[in-house]
Length: 98
Image (cartoon, rainbow, N blue to C red; front, side, top):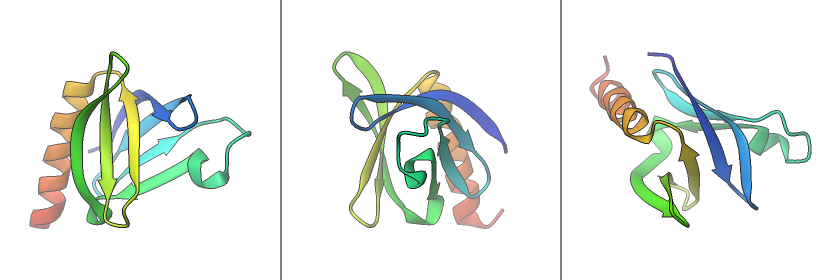
């Protein structure tokens, strides 16, 4: 499953980029050179995601990914419902070993 979503990371303001969903992880990528390399290509493996939460930034619908290391990453995702459905399906398939 390879899916792409237009998204913005809520990190010191909104940082435009894209979310890429594959069989093992969610990856956020941006072309902004003014942010750290970790943020430019942020990989969030399913095995490290503790929880997923629908949330809001002001009046905009967002998704927050809570990691096992205590960090939380908030994204404004265009097509949030479709992203959440595909993320759940991918995480369930990963957990079952499919």
